[in-house]
Amino acid sequence: MNILQTLRIHDIFSFLNSILGLGAILAASNGEAEASAALVILAAIADGADGLVARRIGPGLLGEDLDSLADVISFGVAPAFLAVTNLDMGWNGWIFGGLYLICGSIRLARFNISQKNDKFFEGFPIPAAGILLVAIILFGVPNITIFAILSLSILMISTIHYPKIRDSKLSILLGVFLFVISYLLLTQYSNHRNVFSANIILLAVNLIYLSSPVVIRFLRTEK
Amino acid sequence: MNILQTLRIHDIFSFLNSILGLGAILAASNGEAEASAALVILAAIADGADGLVARRIGPGLLGEDLDSLADVISFGVAPAFLAVTNLDMGWNGWIFGGLYLICGSIRLARFNISQKNDKFFEGFPIPAAGILLVAIILFGVPNITIFAILSLSILMISTIHYPKIRDSKLSILLGVFLFVISYLLLTQYSNHRNVFSANIILLAVNLIYLSSPVVIRFLRTEK
Image (cartoon, helix red, strand yellow):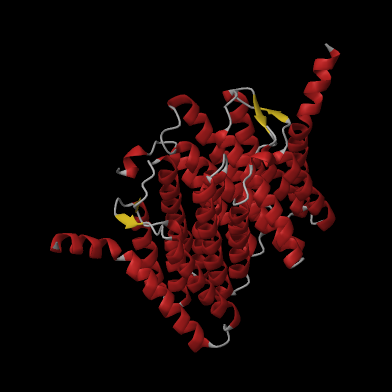
């Protein structure tokens, strides 16, 4: 089977996602944490674009697998690597990074075998976990990073239902928001105040999503 | 669905494979190319053990996906990262690493959707490509590394049939051989002659496998 003929136009976003993930790891290894975080966020935009097009024209034969493989690189390996190099704990850091990576892989494998539901994800999605983790790493407080790794690992493999953002306009708005944040991280890395502000906003938006299942349950009980 | 209950005993080898892959990236970022190569080889042993047990007791619900996700880390990202950091070409290096990663991902995605055949793989398997690439990187000749990246990328997405090693005894023998090589790389990194010899043997064995389709075709024509 000539495999290249089975590729679809949106698979290019999966490839872009993978390459941005590799770039994030390379930036982190050069000590450029802000650039690494920005590349993880750009990878999430590519991932979103992939999903948006795939839902319109169909995923294609390889689409779902290519998407998972790219996700484990950009939102699994890259944040884990950035965490380990920033925790500076030697072998202990490796254990925390490994735990996050394993839980992220379980989350992706479960998604592939689970019956798709249009309304919610089961467990915290790995792109959101990756973005949240790199945002927290940028604050540079090791204990909070470890707490985030442990919490996100558990949330990813949990059965908590997280709402899917399926509205095209909202997806595009979110993409623009993420692009602005990554632009600020890439260009303003010498201006700590701007980077700090951008990071706080990113963290706030992500924490709203993280806590959304509680809010949804509360609203349902109120009715 | 409680996802942890669906895990099988051999999935632990997939997790080990992922963690060794993360370790290989960390070692490479510390400039320890021999240790990085050794960890990629150890990941291949974990991958082999995973396959050996999975064939006996069945892959389980998540087995195949977890296996692919681990493979893209250890034999995709890790060798690509080691190549880019050793090529020292800046952005150009990123392009070569990215190409290898994309072709490796296509190879893994195709394997997941293809009808399984007990006798052969379609395209050069990514664990073999990963080991061959790190062995070549250790020789430290950038042009040969680039040639290897281009060749392996094409071979992985090719339709060439590569024999599967299904014999348990041969698999275990190969595992022991790889373990000895990785042990030499990890412990003898200060002894360049020993590392060079280990690497030459690793390269020779891998090149025999690489050229096996030609030999098999030649033998068939002879009959």
